Length: 388
Image (cartoon, rainbow, N blue to C red; front, side, top):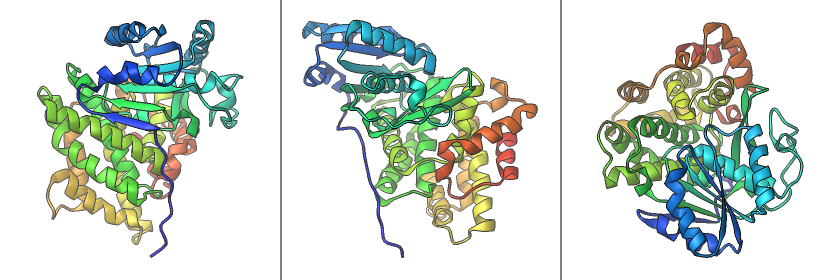
């Protein structure tokens, strides 16, 4: 048995629990800034109460709305707003898009230069060297785990791909997760974000970089997601389900930040850049085929691989049956995707003619490096084809 060695990094402080949004204004003030950039999602009205509470404490607040998934161009615009208002704290309240935009703005505000100077894959990939502005992340969906990750995903219209800013500076000072913010979330949002969280628990658990700490979080998150995601989407989520989904998302973020992901997210990044497609739904469309291809590849080329042993454990956690076999995990995920009515990638414009382009971009994605083993061109093409 090889010796265990790993690192674990996360937000300076994690605040979790129903109703804890009320603590946000004092948490922001404690960071010492006087001028707040409040980054919101496509529904800025949800942050109206937070804005008023911040202003009641004497803080100046400038709002910046992120209508869709963040892009290089949008971040450039946000940096202009931040600089003109002379903001010294960034708070993001919204889904993963708002949180990633907020992280990018807080980090780049102190670096100088252009986002492409620091963006990997399509940019120059320079390291972030300066401390970010203090940043507070408040998720209103349960999927991305962006509140505890050290990267921010940005799309590029020109390159038609998504890539990450990456570095410890992107970790928030405070991650405030309030399950009550899921009240009233549309079922489609719960389904898409919930499947994203599920994939961000499964992939690190099977990852080539899995470690004992992320394993513990993944196991707990998987059990919670398995028992609550389906009923949360198909019926109004009660307090227990909201807590389960919020924790599954949080744990998924902690896992991916410290153990990496795999082929699901290796494909999701270029799909999101090539088409106007919601990230969580893309991950859900890819997950069944990725699991199947990985299982067959491990059996054929690496029968002693530790990830192969984990497939059976995964099946037991998802199905709740100790005697479940590896294929039961695949069937459970495919059944869940069908029940939640997650469409295939053709819905967003992917055609057979563009599969070679997608496979080429997916192979270069950073997430692909943590897949349990390197997949062949034929295996990658099969995943893309089956996910249509």
